[in-house]
Length: 574
Image (cartoon, rainbow, N blue to C red; front, side, top):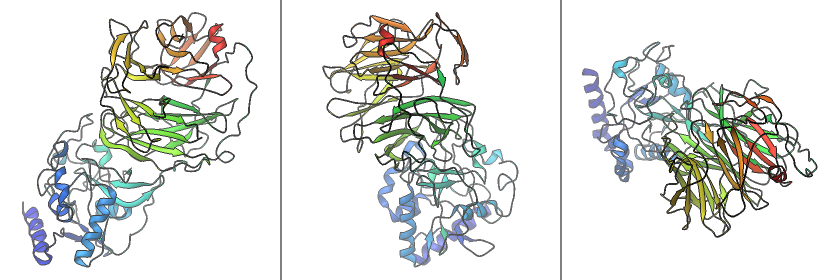
């Protein structure tokens, strides 16, 4: 109690001297900078921005004056520092990562400034839960570290000054709802600068210039992807004549270098045809689907073979569940990505980046920035006849949560969540010739059959009915798309495994159903939740998350969780 009283007296003294709520500052032993003893509180931040009071209690967090402020993005934290500098004539800014870690450790060398373990009496909600549990964020409730700094582990994550590859900003310290292993003094995390979250706050330093740059590095995501540099040269193949079915091959190949993170679980692909020719496939790689180590990897198909995996996108320390790719007629490629805050894949923000025709990728930007449900991206976005971009996302983590629909009418510059529900998660969507939308999904079975959802108003309301197809379940994701020749194609799973169905009357009937096999016996590794399976005349792949595109030569490229299938309409109809 004595330490806390001394802290409050120091803060009050600063306030009475300057009429500005300057946080209590602790000078470092080397004299290079002073750091605020606690994270910036609601009262201190709202002296700069009174409108931020509207975020008090957001999600059940940070209601009182002396709780750490949250829902502040990086630019706003920097603006607070600039305001405080102007008002006081003293140089305030965010800490550099190296400064933060130096101050956190306070001369210690263990995982935490408390030693090898972080005491349970200082835990908040450090269990690995899917839901964020509200808890007090009052500062200085536990003993400070050896240099007098409070809450360096696990109250709120703290913005740092450093910029990381990809345009991200460093974050340190972990939060109230972060598993304890991510509270370590050396744990590297980052966020998109626009990020607002109930996990994120900040503290400040008084110093003219940043200190030593952090020695910790992260792999850089590709920012330049022009053909002839990182992209393999496309080897054009003659358009297949007649029925065509190629030998299935893997597209998930281990990286050739040690710098690309590659984990045991590789899953949830997206694929698109590149303007320069060939395919781009992406998928997540992780130890656990709820893990913060999750990265998005990529591989290229040059017409003959796939390249080894390399990094495609990673926000350090964040879960990256859900990706999609869409190539526009302009040659621009859109990459949609879910980005977590707490590490789980329930609460995601929806982000987008673009690869222009010259091959350069933009930085990842939020298009729907709130970390919440309805943002788990599903592969297979489409462009409608009137130019709208439609993106499906899972509406929640539950298998019966259904699918949400997000719409852009301006080429992806702005987005709207229609607020509706498509039956089934992981839904595939098509536009019918009369302008209606049709979607099939997993779960939410109707009369024991896969559900069909039809919308006549652009996705704002839906009518539901059973299809003739069996429902699919765990480890399975369907594809629904229109082939360039006109028919609708469904790729899904039945008792004998992966099948393809065609409709020539806009989904009213599906007269052609074919098991995806050429009859040859093969033993294949499906990866992810599929594992090893036998493909023969009576059996096809039993599970897999499917993604699909069609090349200009008519070849249909279907990816499961690890396997690349190639066939054409003539083979299906043969």
